[in-house]
Length: 165
Image (tube, rainbow, N blue to C red; front, side, top):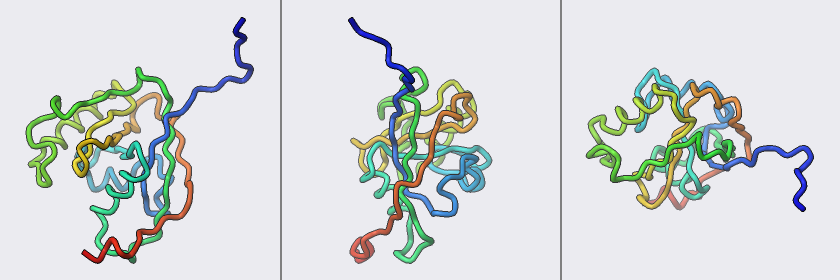
């Protein structure tokens, strides 16, 4: 006979991001709100993560100018493992041009609409860099955001060889 687990807690879905150390645990997403991003417009808070450490590294790398940037850290972003809180979006369901480097705003409009609705805590979307990879756009305005846990896993530095292209 199965017995209930004493002190059972919800299992977390772990995602990853590379962040500047001083802003790594910013739950208000101040930097993202001020600058906007691929999946959200300026003024709209959002937290981006990747399903793997490797993809998180690539995502940060393509937005990094040189090896001597501010100190970076690897951040574990733990989401409640409740499928009802998330939305999986396939490439076929995204607007035309979402994956263009200069997409003209189609991905931004799509993501901003998602965030403003507040129906889901996060949406999983394909990576522009690696189409088979999955990124996560997390909504700080969702009622379950208080269940999202951010923790610094370790310091991070790019291998200098990555900048010799």
